[in-house]
Image (cartoon, rainbow, N blue to C red):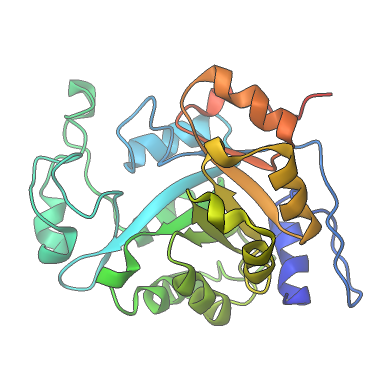
Amino acid sequence: MNVRKTAVASILSMGILGSFFTTETFAYEPSDQVQTVAHRGASGYAPENTMAAFQKGVDMKADYIEIDVQQTKDGELVVIHDVTLDRTTDGTGYIKDHTLEQIRQLDAGSYFGEEFAGEKVPTFEEVLDEFRGKTGILIELKATYYYPGIEEKVASALKERNMHLPAHEKIIIQSFEFDSMQRMDKLLPEVPVGVLTSRATDLSEAKLSEFSTYAEYVNPSRLLVNSSVVDEVHERNMGIMAWTVRNEQEVQPLLDAGVDGIITDYPDYAPLHKAE
């Protein structure tokens, strides 16, 4: 693992990965602090991946907001979860087949509630500019096979704002596409990356050891998380954030397992500290 990058990640995560080490080895130091991540913003209370949801996450004191990044037909970065517009907007079809101007004309709030009518699909840069310094940002790159070169564009946007430097913002980049995260590791060596998975096979000792060569986090479905998995991740000097909590009863088993972060639609469900 890149020792310098891992040490930087420990600073950015405010305790998840322990203290800063300047020696040639890095040791994971568990913390009682559990990071709360507002999934697609506080999406239990506002339409997901909108400025309203992100602001709600900030208002609810989440340590991070989680955002999903995709790319338009004309090469602009937008924040939306699905590869199509149908579920969360009044549009239809693939993101990649629409220009930014077309997407910005859509209503991304009415499906959730009339009070959110007129909410727009935000751009990646818009989210960075509005929330930098207010909260951490967990950036998920979606369906990167549709968007060749998206990693370079994300890296460029962060560099333009000096958000790739450890002295500034809390930034983590994650994806289900492992090759994409290996690319991000090379593009932004000082920014921690995470691998997302819903497959138990990705939590084998061999796979975790492979991930540890380029990633600082392994972020699995909460259904795969237990204390043994957490211990295996920690032994490889990585943190672990579990997704997605949508019920208060789902929190305690994750705390008991010793996770470092809880990704949730309801930031008020996740306490700040692990169980005694």
